[in-house]
Image 1: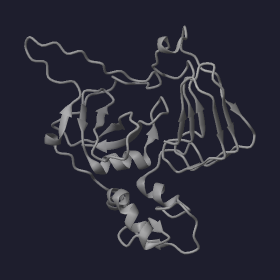
Image 2: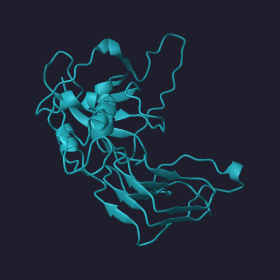
Image 3: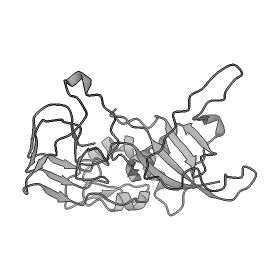
Length: 261
């Protein structure tokens, strides 16, 4: 996700080249009175922001008692005019647009005068056979989706409700909450399980800082939240990572919108 600086420490972020990590460039968390100086960095080709500083207007849960502070607060970072920002905050993209927009090798991200295209999709490009082989663990989920229309089938046996069924004598606390910017949630007609009519669902990844794992849980729900499930699907997980937009807090959780029936 780029560089994330947080805590009561002094940071001098200098001469970093941060590109194409699918989230954003530099994040500055709650640093209290500590100074963060950002100078001479190249930040490019992100679907998220180049530099984002968390403040009281951005959702951020923290405790200040263990740092001898009376409250949680943050000092804005000092950004010089020597930082270079290019092609950040990209809009949501289809799988084809995501791959075709790359002007570099899909594997090593370097420029080349001669690229070789993937023999299956003919869209992903590589500067060498080695790069193509190393990138296959990521590209294998995107490759079959690089057509004008594609369908991913999800079996109900591979899903589970986000809110478990309440059994007699048990109490379940529902901690489901949504970002304030999400207008219209809990509104609209619920999907008709007996109909083949299409409706829109939102698929969202979790907040985590772990290595790439296409078998992690995703959340899927419709606008009315009548349909609200969790599932594991490597194809959807990779598409969410590659093509999705950052959620409201702009950290690591990403989202895509799809037709469902």
